[in-house]
Image 1 (cartoon, rainbow, N blue to C red):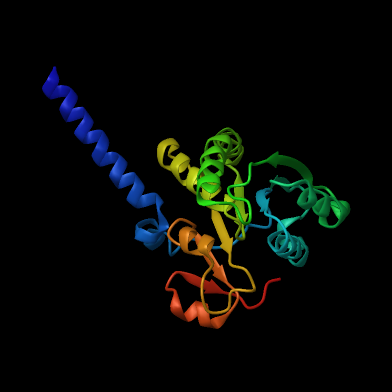
Image 2 (tube, one colour):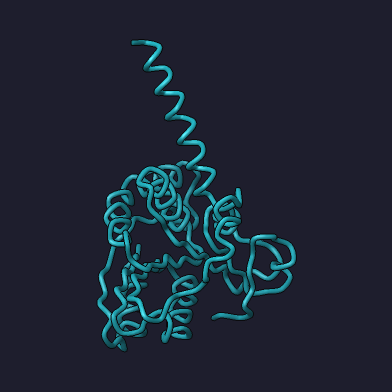
Amino acid sequence: MGYTLCLFALVFLQALVVRTLWVIPIFGIREGAELSEKRGLQAGRALRLFVFLGSGGHTGEMLRLLDNYRTALLRPGTQLYVGFSDEASLRKFQTTVGANLSGVEVQFLRFSKAREVGASWLASTRSVAFSFVQSLWCLTWLKWQFVGQQHLVLLNGPGTCCIIASWLKMLEIVTLTRSKIVYVESLARTDTLSLSGKLLYPLVDEFVVQWDELYERYDRARCYGILV
């Protein structure tokens, strides 16, 4: 009996390692296997889109990104999930992009901030831990909205995005489903990555920068020019 349990545990561990190597993009296994797949969004299929509004400049850039690529991202039939952690960002969305949507259904998901600006390391540790736990329910629910659907998770920088991407990848590992995560580095980052960018670089499926200097320094980066 003990031998059987040990053998089962070993097989399970091996399967978990293989699945992790397959899911985490930095290892390049799945990416290499899917080079022949058609990239981009299929116009004929409905899209389920999740975006996260940070605060201040992050929110401004995300709103400009949505507005600049409205035809592709906010076409009729899109189901839009808007994550936010402060009321100011929510109001800004509602009075700009959200005020001019046609045929798009919107749902809002509240997240706790991973870290307040100027907070001590102790306070930051507590807030990150709380945000990590609080985010699980929202992201588990969101993950199942994506199953079998064309979907996209669009992130652009605040610390909570690291928690969101981490949970989605962990859920992808254990549920044998997919998550398409795209991270767009801030326009302000011309030659070095932000802390969020450094943390998310190994995790996200597509890492987009807006300056050639960054594109040339990071192998997985893609650059389509100025997006916001």
